[in-house]
Length: 94
Image 1 (tube, rainbow, N blue to C red):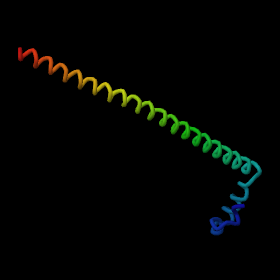
Image 2 (image 1 turned 180 degrees about the horizontal axis):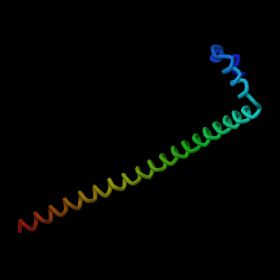
Image 3 (image 1 turned 90 degrees about the vertical axis):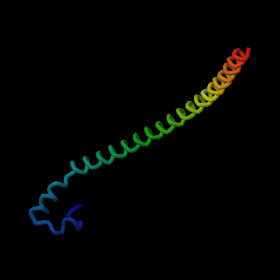
Image 4 (image 1 turned 180 degrees about the vertical axis):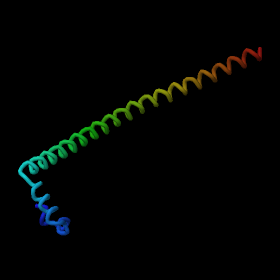
Protein backbone atom coordinates (compact mmCIF):
# COMPACT_ATOMS: atom_id res chain seq x y z
CA UNK A 1 0.00 0.00 0.00
CA UNK A 2 1.23 3.49 -0.77
CA UNK A 3 0.85 4.73 2.82
CA UNK A 4 4.05 2.90 3.74
CA UNK A 5 6.13 4.46 0.99
CA UNK A 6 8.68 7.25 1.34
CA UNK A 7 6.63 9.58 -0.85
CA UNK A 8 3.71 9.66 1.58
CA UNK A 9 5.67 10.08 4.82
CA UNK A 10 5.49 13.89 4.71
CA UNK A 11 1.78 13.99 3.91
CA UNK A 12 -0.63 15.51 6.41
CA UNK A 13 -3.14 13.27 8.21
CA UNK A 14 -5.90 14.50 5.88
CA UNK A 15 -3.79 13.69 2.82
CA UNK A 16 -2.97 10.26 4.20
CA UNK A 17 -6.67 9.64 4.84
CA UNK A 18 -7.43 10.62 1.24
CA UNK A 19 -4.81 8.19 -0.04
CA UNK A 20 -6.19 5.47 2.23
CA UNK A 21 -9.76 6.04 1.01
CA UNK A 22 -8.60 5.92 -2.61
CA UNK A 23 -7.45 2.32 -2.21
CA UNK A 24 -10.39 0.02 -2.84
CA UNK A 25 -10.95 -3.25 -4.64
CA UNK A 26 -12.13 -1.17 -7.59
CA UNK A 27 -8.79 0.63 -7.92
CA UNK A 28 -7.01 -2.70 -7.85
CA UNK A 29 -9.20 -3.82 -10.78
CA UNK A 30 -8.51 -0.57 -12.61
CA UNK A 31 -4.77 -1.02 -12.10
CA UNK A 32 -4.99 -4.62 -13.28
CA UNK A 33 -6.94 -3.52 -16.36
CA UNK A 34 -4.32 -0.88 -17.09
CA UNK A 35 -1.54 -3.44 -16.91
CA UNK A 36 -3.44 -5.82 -19.19
CA UNK A 37 -4.00 -2.97 -21.66
CA UNK A 38 -0.34 -1.93 -21.54
CA UNK A 39 0.79 -5.49 -22.25
CA UNK A 40 -1.70 -5.79 -25.11
CA UNK A 41 -0.56 -2.51 -26.66
CA UNK A 42 3.10 -3.52 -26.32
CA UNK A 43 2.41 -6.81 -28.09
CA UNK A 44 0.48 -5.10 -30.89
CA UNK A 45 3.33 -2.60 -31.27
CA UNK A 46 5.86 -5.41 -31.48
CA UNK A 47 3.79 -7.30 -34.05
CA UNK A 48 3.22 -4.21 -36.19
CA UNK A 49 6.92 -3.35 -36.00
CA UNK A 50 7.78 -6.88 -37.13
CA UNK A 51 5.32 -6.61 -40.02
CA UNK A 52 6.85 -3.26 -40.99
CA UNK A 53 10.34 -4.78 -40.98
CA UNK A 54 9.16 -7.63 -43.23
CA UNK A 55 7.46 -5.19 -45.61
CA UNK A 56 10.65 -3.12 -45.81
CA UNK A 57 12.66 -6.25 -46.65
CA UNK A 58 10.24 -7.11 -49.47
CA UNK A 59 10.37 -3.54 -50.80
CA UNK A 60 14.15 -3.65 -50.71
CA UNK A 61 14.21 -6.86 -52.75
CA UNK A 62 11.77 -5.41 -55.29
CA UNK A 63 13.78 -2.22 -55.50
CA UNK A 64 16.95 -4.24 -56.12
CA UNK A 65 15.29 -6.13 -58.98
CA UNK A 66 14.03 -2.86 -60.44
CA UNK A 67 17.50 -1.29 -60.17
CA UNK A 68 19.05 -4.25 -62.02
CA UNK A 69 16.55 -3.93 -64.85
CA UNK A 70 17.21 -0.18 -65.03
CA UNK A 71 20.94 -0.86 -65.27
CA UNK A 72 20.40 -3.17 -68.24
CA UNK A 73 18.06 -0.64 -69.86
CA UNK A 74 20.65 2.11 -69.41
CA UNK A 75 23.36 -0.01 -71.03
CA UNK A 76 20.95 -0.77 -73.87
CA UNK A 77 20.41 2.96 -74.40
CA UNK A 78 24.17 3.55 -74.37
CA UNK A 79 24.68 0.89 -77.06
CA UNK A 80 21.82 2.31 -79.15
CA UNK A 81 23.23 5.85 -78.83
CA UNK A 82 26.70 4.69 -79.87
CA UNK A 83 25.18 2.87 -82.85
CA UNK A 84 23.27 6.01 -83.86
CA UNK A 85 26.42 8.13 -83.59
CA UNK A 86 28.31 5.66 -85.79
CA UNK A 87 25.51 5.58 -88.38
CA UNK A 88 25.32 9.40 -88.40
CA UNK A 89 29.12 9.70 -88.84
CA UNK A 90 29.06 7.16 -91.71
CA UNK A 91 26.35 9.17 -93.47
CA UNK A 92 28.38 12.39 -93.17
CA UNK A 93 31.53 10.70 -94.49
CA UNK A 94 29.84 9.59 -97.74
